[in-house]
Length: 595
Image: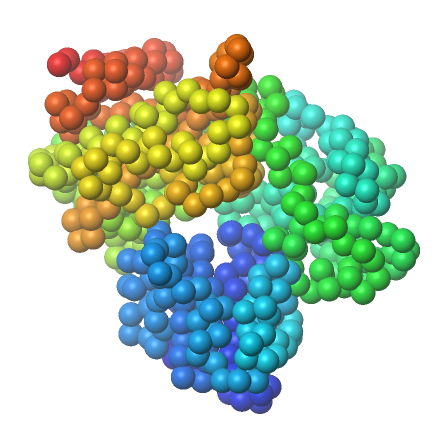
């Protein structure tokens, strides 16, 4: 079926069920950003391939609610269909619950899949629709009735991440978690976020593209810990390692029965922001629930010394691959080799596989030339990929997984003649990235406070970007992780020593070009004095920043000094690992800017 036929089939299902509207989320039972094929429901019904958004279908309207990262992409992907894009994270934005409250009739019935909506989101929807006396009908997996070839659960094998990479064994992590459960006056904790479970049990898997996690739940109390996972995914060896760390294994679909069997005096810690409505409701039937964020989120975000050393090694190997890639790209274009966005993306992906401990790409590369780079999350495909020409800017946002760390780097490089506007945008975005890289701040500073440092150079020239400035990065885990971020919207989380966070401002002009510079930063303590505890950043990323597009007159002397020092560090650390020809080329690329 095409999108129009799917909407028609859905409306027939709604008619049979007596529903006036349905909500189709863009996530899975585990609150994931990236999804296995089974739960690509939003993509299946709408054709939209972005990683964020919610679909609402009524008998007369089909809408997709998404944010600024996907405005251009969603308009293109929804073109020709009935779907209308509703913008979020912009002034006067109306989210889908409020839109439904304004557009549904009194007494309307809304169908949801409670497996794929969080408890908090569902409760918010109920509250917003309450004045309408609207009903919410929860029917898990209702799309099964019309999605005839819907994929099943993935069956990829689980493997153990050794302590020489993780820096801490599962037993130690469980010991700390149990003290945190006790501090909250609870008896149990239920985890459903896949990266938290992977980190806690030191397991990895490939159930989701680019995310080395396993579809699972975890339940722990003061004595026991259980991993709920599809039978057949855990080998006897892995089961034995888990058993030695105090972890038992049960079938994935047995979680509901286990929750029902818990004693009446049980008090469970569970995070309503990530736990799906179905499971949360199961707990409420028999137990008390303490709805708080999982403490695993913060413990996972603050890297130990083994993990931070692993990140440094990952960025060294990543830098080698990136410099060899950019050398190859420049030499290929000089020889008039015809290359598309897809061709070059595949080349870099292959180059990363040559490193020791390489475990694949950490996300789908954004390989974008010219106007395609104005889409912050553009992904090329062989049918539509542009051919690179000897002019304009090429942007590649890419990263890799290694057993010892995960990387995420963006570089924008000139392929030939540039316009004055391209050079200005390139320079101003770089000024923003440098501002965060050299930031010094007091302990207690939030990501929102630091965001202003990055945007200030752009705002002075009346330029801006719609996405966040920085996100946390997992250790051989999800390339996007919390609890910290750096963006305009408020999040009550300090930036703390041990956190690894991206720094990626950009400027995007639809139909023309896009610029983004991204390094990844490790937060470190700098000094403690009578004024407080001072923090700053170590730049982990090792890849030269091209100085050819710069307008030096727009740069402060201290910014040029930072840039020259950074490029020198890149050369000093990477050149011993490159061929003579490659290192000679890099020497020129990292030559200091003279003003």
